Each structure stands twice: as structure tokens, then as C-alpha cells.
Image (cartoon, rainbow, N blue to C red; front, side):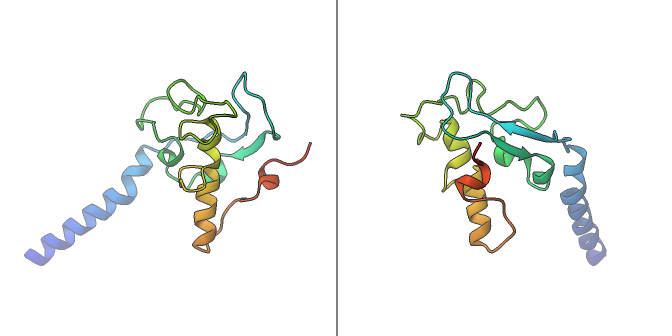
Length: 134
């Protein structure tokens, strides 16, 4: 009896672990271009980004302020990564840090470098790979 109950509990836990996230799945937009916020001076070319190519990653990894149900705001939205000045680009709240913070697995560069260090498939880690010459 105890063994059957244990097996049932483990099975239920596994179903919840793998099936429930699918109920809350968000259909990610397709390819998009990431540009610096309005009013900021771009020093590199815009970045082509594929949401579909990152579909296996939990949305909250990048969209860390998202509540899981409402609309997802852009990084440059009020209350997120609004500092687009060159002087403040190393601040955690800067638009630059959202994509380039090397020690944060929530940023593109940080995540790609962590995957590379773990010898897993990763995206680009060099500037020119994301920001091609015009």
C-alpha cells in the first residue's frame, strides 16, 4: 500500500513538473531586431534576435520582471532597463547591461558565456557576431 502511494505521488509530481508549464506557455514572437532606446546613440548595429530559437529557455530568465501572465514589457520600458546613457552603461539597470553583463546569466552575453564554459551549444559571444558591420 505504501509503495503504491509513493509511486502515485512521484508520478503526479512528474506530471506536474513537465505538463503544467505547457499550460502557461507563451507563443513567442518570431525574429525581431533589438535597437537602442529612443534618444540613445547607437554605437553598434542593431541585433537580429530569434525568439523561436530561444523557446526552450524560460521566459522569466530574460524577462525577469514578468509576472507570468500579463503582457511582457520591452527592456527599455519604464521601470526596467531605462538608463541608456553611455556614462551609466555598466549599471545593472542600464539597457546595455540587460544584454551585455558578462556575470549575469540573464543577459545574452552572460548566458552564452556560461553555456560555452559548460561546453554546451551556445550563441555568439563576440561583438561582431551580434553586431555585424553595416
